[in-house]
Length: 204
Image 1 (spheres, rainbow, N blue to C red):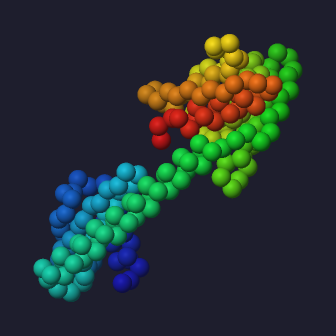
Image 2 (image 1 turned 90 degrees about the vertical axis):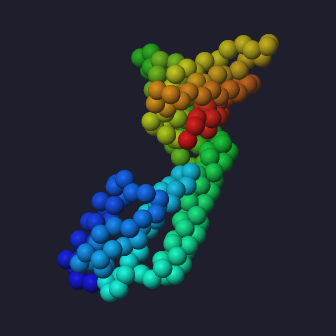
């Protein structure tokens, strides 16, 4: 296949990705891989796939098309399963994250926080600023997970005779989650733990 033909082929494939195709069908691909090509759409919980099969010469025989579709469907199932498993692994790693270091400095009525978080096999560092030291720590912690997450509330309250930090976060307009941790002797570290829990509770 020459470079110009390859360019047109991939341009056609790009258009097919956004086209409203049935789950299985065929499309006109004249001059590239023959008169017609067979298409198959596959879909998983976290990904979508488009398989296009054809050749330059004759059209595919019925038994060739059946075997090709079965292979594409099986490969699609495997690819989507891998994507779904990676999503579960990410969620587990996020849920197991823990604050390793929490530093807070105050100046001019503002608190600056730096939080280091152990997440899977790496250490991430985030920064946050707020009038409240607890909110600054929560913001810094969120920064290590996903800066797009919005902090709604972070405060140390008494619950059932115990001091506990409550952190509420939001992603977009529809998803809100809460995290909590007993304050103990280190309310700032507890805030970081609560913020990590709240972020992990958000729908992915």
